[in-house]
Length: 109
Picture 1 (cartoon, rainbow, N blue to C red):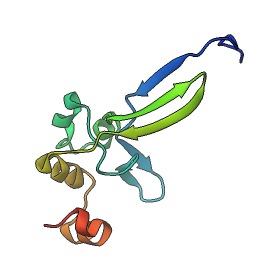
Picture 2: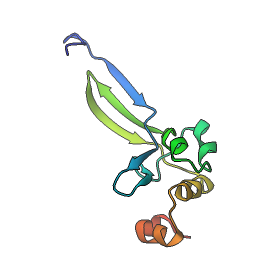
Picture 3: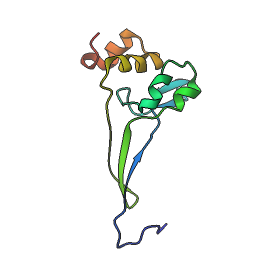
């Protein structure tokens, strides 16, 4: 699209990615990246809301670094609070057995 002159280096951080997304296969809300991705602080209080619409509006602490339209790297800040992690798992409808089977040593309860 030639939006950036060839002699310039334009970096940008992309943030505010969705925390959850709709799975047409499972017919429910699932993690957009993985369930250990951090949540923007203003959205943490929405975790107990039962509506899919609210969950789909939540933002993650994911990011991309882009240079002149090309992604250089990406990542996320992880959830560091056990109570918040438990709330995410509840929002996803995961049972203790599912947590043990899917995450094993990452989630020992």
